[in-house]
Amino acid sequence: MQGMLAIIWSDVFTKNLLGPAIRIAALILIGFPLILTVAAFVGRSTRKKLTPQANMLIRKGIVYFGSILIFLAVLHQSGYKLTALLGAAGIAGIAIGFASQTSVSNIISGLFLISEKPFTVGDIIQVGSTKGTILSIDLLSVKLRTFDNHMIRLPNEMLIKSEVRNITRFPIRRLDIKIGVAYKENVGNVRQVLLDIADKNTFCLDEPEPAVRFVNFGDSALEFLFAVWCVREDYIKLQTKLMQEIKERFDTEGIEIPFPHRTLYAGSVTEPFPIHIVEAQDKQAPERESSKA
Amino acid sequence: MMDMELWQPHQIEQDQCLEAQVGPLQLWLRRSGDEIRIATKHRRDIESLVKAVPLHPAAERKPAGLDWSRWVCGSCDQLLLTPVTPDRPVVVRPEVPLKIPPGREALFFVGVPLWVRITAGDANKVQLCEVPSVTLSNIWFGDPMSGDLCYSLRTRARREFSDSKAEPHRAICPVTIRNAAPMQVDIERFCVHVAHLSIYPGTSRLWTGGVQITFKGEAETSPVEYSEKPPTYEEVDKTLSEPRAPVKKRLLIKSLGNFGYFGGA
Image 1 (cartoon, rainbow over the protein chains, first blue to last red):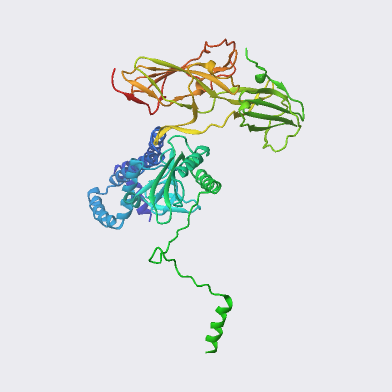
Image 2: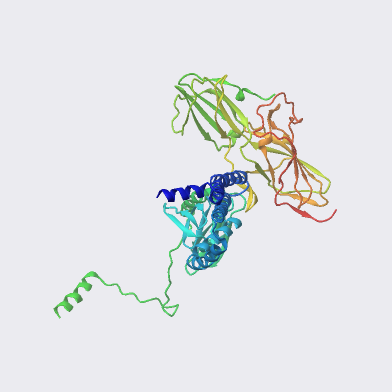
């Protein structure tokens, strides 16, 4: 035991191990703090010029890249042959690549999303039937908060492949309301009433101007498209108030919104359908007879 | 000079209610303890448009049927009403679009509806609120992807200010549009950033500083100059309110929108 200690002691204080040990210690003690300092400095410098996600990517990239360099340098100082390590890493990389292709795809998709900026934190987006406010745009996924307060995680790969609707990208929005009125109504009067409603509504913008389009002779009604504009923050308030105002005003003006209906003809326009009115007593008598039978 | 009593400070006693009218805007201000309570109402009759009634004791100490707002402002025994410009730009839309040939200019007198700023206190003034004298509708000036939310003002865009009656809730803004382009320009709407304008009392009505817009062509931005001096159409001896946002240099912002022009010299 004492002999082993003597050998180790003498080896440490010879040039064989002392130099590399000092260099490894210096790499670790100076290298890691230096990497963190550089990452923090670059992060502060680019904070105002880049989005928070891009800023985070750059900082993490500096830290991970610097850590790998320090690790390789430590291995080199320790006397390991890096060529063998790289060879093993190559083989391992192929195996890991097959296993993590989805994650890598998400990371690459995330980089494209960050550079393309189809949306930012705070925007309301719709992907398929999912609609919500963006909480964060991360390396692997985007987190949404739905209006009923659920958290939804959308993989970046899915967002790159799908149609993403950014509802709040632009400062104003158009509200389209489909309205059907009875065939007996005066089209000009309906148009005038709707434009008057828009004019009096405080959330409707005067310009872009509200529009009333007569779009179709429907099965049960004359179909109109009523389009009004508002600032995006007022969309819900406008929708609620405008629908109510249309209903109230139509009631006041006597404009009918018909239910879907079908008109039946007997086959000859001159002869009406034969109608036989069944009295209550007549109805009960056949039932008693049938029950006796 | 016009009657300035409407814009003078007034004392308010404890538990007293004062009433004022600035055109269609009726105001009630009540002092209760260390609170000032404010209620407003907009009248719709035409006669109210020219009415200017300074702060005076209200007929009732606690008028009913009003929606009151409350401010805690300590021992404030003095109230001041000040006319200020709207808090957003105003898009002026002449009822009949005007055409200006190349090299010519046109002067319009636009009646800008004012906001009434209510301030309490004497030495240490506390701004309580600003109330619009009329409810203006909103309009988007720009394109669907970018622009400014403004107030919409339909106007006859008078060429003479004496044509109209003096209304205490409006300030006349002289707007000059100069056509420096080689083609005729149709003026369908123009945007005035009223935040850069002061308000002055004239002999018969309120005024703002002048605005000059130079149209240089469809593809160019129109330089806008906001005058820091009172207009010279009536005698002005003081400033009632300063601009919300002072102008330091000529602005190169879009002020003319959706105009049409015809080719030719």
